[in-house]
Length: 245
Image (cartoon, rainbow, N blue to C red; front, side, top):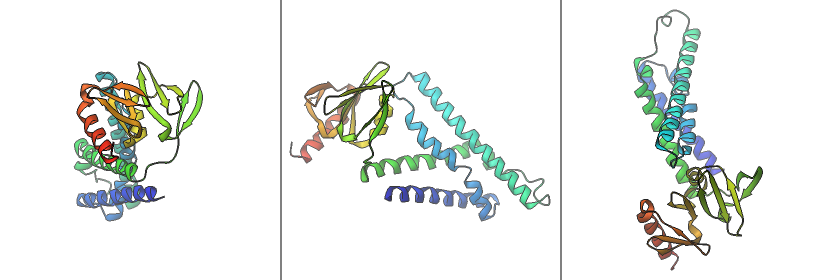
């Protein structure tokens, strides 16, 4: 409930602040509020889809996916801007509005992209903070071998990426295969899990440093890649110090 209130408050504040900015473009306050709604769906879509771009996929595919998402949200925003402008012209009649064009700033892709980026990134940071402060108790639901599987986050021991498949290993020893990329699992599971390798994501509650190059989780030793070596050592050392390990 608290999370929902905070999220709604964020988007209401985003609409208000964007509207304040748009009043400088010669819109009345109510017109500025309506016009600011043009940015809302695209900013929400951007904050939802961009983190899901598979970071471990090939560079060209990752770049193309990112470009497609950005182009999609930009087109949506400009469509809504033109729609509201047409509504303003219809409501106000011909006099003073028939020759009115959309302000140059709202037709500027850089200006529009900047607003979308600020709103989306702000929500991304808020979502990460909320996940830490109010961890979700809802089970993770996914498809494995054409069956729906629901697991509590704390029951997941680690995630193992094997070529085109990802395997979910539980504390009870069960293994479930899934085609969702490991980076998407990283976003889904949140701060309670730690990336130690391009192929491994481990539950912090069960992970301990076995050596500078490996982590022990559930009796199994998993390798730590050079890319994650420093962050893994810092996080797990702090964790073990805090728990007296």
